[in-house]
Structures are given as C-alpha cells and as structure tokens.
Image (cartoon, rainbow, N blue to C red; front, side):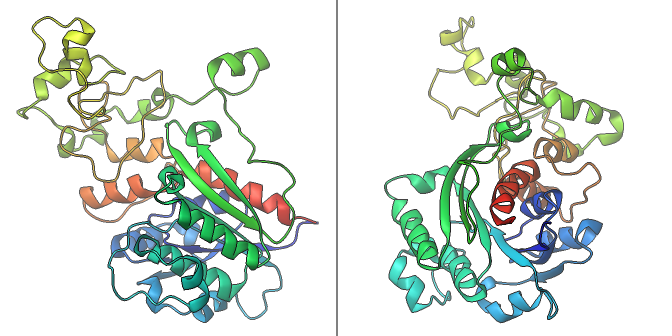
Length: 353
C-alpha cells in the first residue's frame, strides 16, 4: 500500500511543476514565488485550492513555516520540488548557512543555496530540482557537484537526469537538467519515457512524439484571436510570410537557393523568423522572445496564449493572470507539466515500499 505523499514547491512560477506533481498523485501543500502574477495565477486555478500559496522572496520565509504547511497531524512522506533560477535576482540579501556556503560559494548559486537551505532544514524524503542543461557546463559544474555532495551528506541517493520534453509527451524540443534525490532506493536508472521517434514508435508499436498540429489546431479560430499576434506592417512581415513551415530565415538565403537573397546564412540567430510545422514538434517556447524571434505559427503570425500553453502541456482550462507579456514569461519559464510528472513518478516509485 502506497504511503501518503505530499509535495512542497519552491520557485513555483505559473505552476507547471506543481501541476505535474498533482498529475503524479502527489498533492502540493505549499507553493511560493517572488512574482506576484505567478502567485495570482496559482490562486485562479482550483487544482491548488488546498495549497498554501505565498507571494514572497524565499529568503524571507523560514523553513519552519514551509514545513508547517504539511500540518501537525501529517504522518506521511513529502518531497521538495522546484527549479531555482541560476542568476540571482539580486547579488545582495540572500542569507546562506555555513553548511551550504561551504559547499557552494558562488554568486550564481545564491538561489540554489535557498533551495538547499530548505532541503537541509525540512528533511524531505526526496527532491526534484530542475534547471537548464548548461548547469553541466564546466563553468557551472561546481554548482551541480556541490549540490549533489550536500544532498549525499544529508542521506540522499541521487541521480542526474538530462531530459528532453519530447520523450514524455510534450510537443516541444526542450532539454532540461533534473537533479533527483531519494531517501529510498531508485528502482530504475531513469524516468520512464512515454513517447519515441517515429521509426522506433512504428516498429515497436509505441506512441510517437507529439506534433504541434495535434495540440494547436483547435485554437486556429477567430474566437482565439489576439491583437498581439499580428505582424502586418512590421519590419519583417513580408519575409516571415515567405518562410515555409518548419524553416527559419535561412530559407531566404543563397544557402537555400533563394533568388535575390534577403539574408546571409548563419549571420542571424537560428530562431529568427523561425516557423512551426504542424507535423513536427515545436522548438523551445521562450519566456521573453524578441519581436521577430520564433517560433511563429505556420500561418505567419505570433502564437496565441492557448497555443503556447498547449505546447507546454498546461491543462486546457488552466487560467493565467497578468498582461500578455507577463503570461508569455510565466508559460515560457514553466516546467512542462507532463515532463514534471515523469520526473516525480520516477522519484515516487523509489519511495514506495
């Protein structure tokens, strides 16, 4: 019989990680974020009606307050989830315990220290920490190594998982790093992949990668129109219209055989005038795209909120609070819920007796 399991969420954002936890049947009892719009988003959605939602700087929130959210009578196990931004909001003001300071003494890791502070103080049964893959780059590797050393000293068995959202049913190429720790024992080497490249899927009768056309088609109707999607009158509107689905600005260069080339190949960022193809997964949805940075819709417009939400696998009825710019940032910064679900299920099975 599975023991009762709960989650505490740090750096919760719009709730992508938290939704994934609920999908894995691990309810979130505490969520916190420094961005007011993010916390208002959490408040709008019934899935979090029993979650204590806190707007504030984690530095100012005690570990006792966080753990108390489990309730005095709670006798089950709990996990810590979240992805601390690697760049601190401020270089000042983050208190770090001596124990954590000894392991990580790096200004880029100040928010990671706060995650570790809560980890050490609250003593969960497991954790899932998410970040960008570049945390494994030699210049950042000290952060990962120190994190794992501290977690091991606290009695956790740990795993480093380099994951692509495509493998878990997310219609998006999105690579992320997960550091996972358990007080139990990992039953398998890595989280179970649910979706596969077409050749493997077809030969072994498995689900194939999800394409954006499958999740976006219903939103290509007038009722979902957004003024911000329009590109007409813009600097590169005509060029965008000429880019075929699945291509970028390079389609309009000599490299692609384009007559009277408008651009030079490899002289622009790869996502300049990048356009989705309905029969392929999306590229990574970003938090703050520039005015001509894709992915764009194959119909030569910017993506709509329900479209980027669907690409990130938020529930269809999920509500977001704030301006259009704020919502783009919230969705782009989120861990895709289906990806989070896979990671939390992986941890969860290690805690089942």
